[in-house]
Image (cartoon, rainbow, N blue to C red):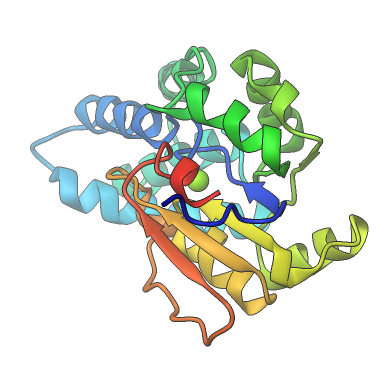
Length: 235
Ligand SMILES: [Mg+2]
C-alpha cells in the first residue's frame, strides 16, 4: 500500500553543494594557491589553517563572494610571507579565484530529475546565501530556475533571515521545510526559526559550514538523507 501523499508544502532549497557543485572548485583553487607558496617554509595544513582564519575575518567584514575569497588569499599570503604580494603575485592569486568564476554549473546527481517532481506538488523557493549578483548568475546558468517560484539571497542564513522569508511569503512554519547540506546555515538556523528541515549529506561540505545537527523537538522534524533524489520519496 502506498503511504498517504504529503499535502503541498513550501520547500526552501539551498543551492551550493545541494543543487550544484561549489566547494570542490574552491578546494582546487586553494590547492593551486598552496602549491604556489613556498613548500619548504609552509606545510599545506598550516596554510589551510591561516586561510580559514583569514576567510572568517573577511566574510565577517565583507560578506561572501569571489572578491572576498581573493582578498582572503591575499591576506593569507601576506601573513605567511610577512610582506604583501607584488603586483605579479597579486595577478597569480587573482587567477586562482578567477578559475572558480569560470566553472560551468555541474548539477549534483538526481537534481535534474527530482526538482520537476517536487515542483509539481510543492512550492519551491531557492534560498542561497552570498553575493546576490554572483548567486543569481549561477542560477541563470543552471537551467533549473523555472522550478522555483522565488529566489532569496540573504547575506547570511541566520534564524532572522528565515523568519523574514516566512513573513515575506506568509508561510506557515509547520508546512515549510529548509533543505540543504550545511548544518550551520541550512539546518540549525531554520529549526531555530520553527521550520522543519532536511539535511542532505554532501561529502565535501566546506569546513566553515560544519556544525553538530540540532535535534528538534516534536512536532518539528529533521529528516536526514544521503542524496537529493531521496527527497522524492518524502515529498
Ligand atoms: Mg550549501
